[in-house]
Image 1 (cartoon, each protein chain N blue to C red):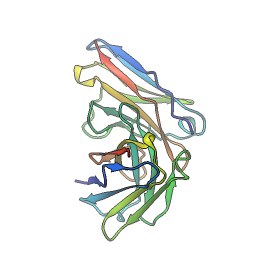
Image 2 (image 1 turned 180 degrees about the horizontal axis):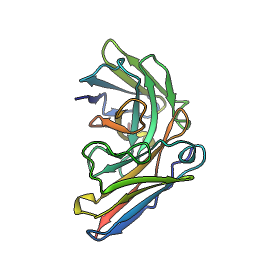
Image 3 (image 1 turned 180 degrees about the vertical axis):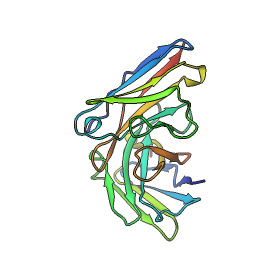
Length: 121
Length: 109
């Protein structure tokens, strides 16, 4: 069974860079035609798609966050990572990593448990 | 890009049917048959209920169904049950990225 687990600091200072890693177990990040995604949810608000990456390193980002986001992949560690620069309080959210249920289908059937990141001095 | 538009809340009595709409544009909902729906209970991880507009993952009750017409997708819950009370989000492929809906709170009266 595929499992995803987010990790990283729970507190980040304003103007600094938020860095999170998603560790994949139960399957290889490079074995199939999947994009691995980051999604976030501010407290009490809705879901927001941040971006996704293919094992080859090809990445796509939300137009609204593109200038601040970098997603990378480390196939040797079966991990992919998120960096969000110049954070403000508005970036406080639960951050999820996710993957589509199956190849060529569009629906995130696998999610990490989520990690709360608070932006505060 | 703007979030897809969903009603803030819908409600129904047990056994009734409710439908949640998800309105986008020809660049997202209307342009692709790649709409998904998620159920989220308070403090929990979102759960995939519908993918590719109308397909149900294994284990999702057939009370949940999805459809699409032009730029609007819909999720229908038939035979509403108490455990269906939750927040629901739609999500659409929009050409190399995805966009979520604003979310709908479903209340079982």
